[in-house]
Length: 283
Ligand code: PRT
Ligand code: ZN
Image (cartoon, rainbow, N blue to C red; front, side, top):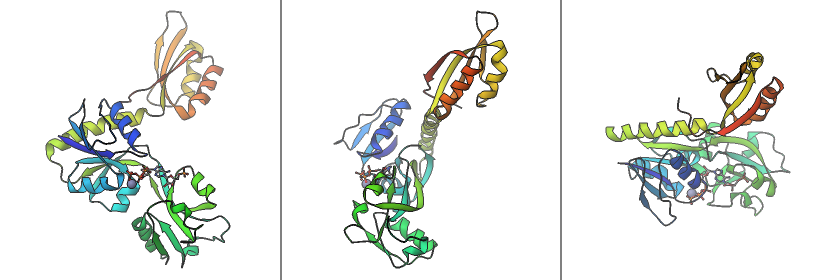
């Protein structure tokens, strides 16, 4: 049976459990639990610290895992990244005190950079021929310049508010990260087959995230303009209504452009617009 490692607690935990649940797989998630058996798919779930997931998968303690790409890159683990999962998005960036005379990457020459990601940073500095000192610290990296243990930092940034609060500015994005599905490189054939089924479920959930199912009534003379407004996920469905000259139009619209499209559709004559949650998009 396939064994998946997920973060026991922390930022990725809820989204991992949510992705599994939405894929029809229910798991008992307990903070103190190490291993549980899932319902709805032949799957065991191993709860670990995110730092340990790449290695656990590389060594076969778990067959697959969900972890931030930043951890995979830092651990240099011998695993395949099978799929991006679309949550846990962040970037790892270089940041400097906001009043510094930053003028480009050469600024870091001879400077000390605090980080919890020394390997990724070291690779980046080598690539760019920058000779800086890496100060490895485990947490609260953003405090390092203020307390005088480094000139700058290399850390995870999401909204950017931690940097602002600490008087720092982001000057270089080194890695864009998100949660990824990692896979052991020597999976047995029957496990590979289960993995394909699991990936298929994950893909369909990913495809439906941020999408809405939209239905509306349209007079016949508005059909052409409405079709011009809608995104082209093949053709929208058009069904005649009982009332002559009217149609029901069904389509899928990305949440980001929903209100813009709806206003345009109303302007060309759409009425009774229904917006529904899209659960799965199986292509
Ligand atoms: O206990 P365990 O070791 O499992 O967890 P952890 O404490 O090491 O990691 P956790 O749960 O904090 O993060 C897990 C993963 O979430 C990370 O490896 C990233 O892939 C991803 N992620 C996404 C983030 C963030 N966003 C994030 N904002 N990880 C950390 N942060 C921190 C960052 O370190 C900084 O202190 O949030 C702060 C910056 O956030 P903003 O929004 O102020 O910019
Ligand atoms: Zn961790």
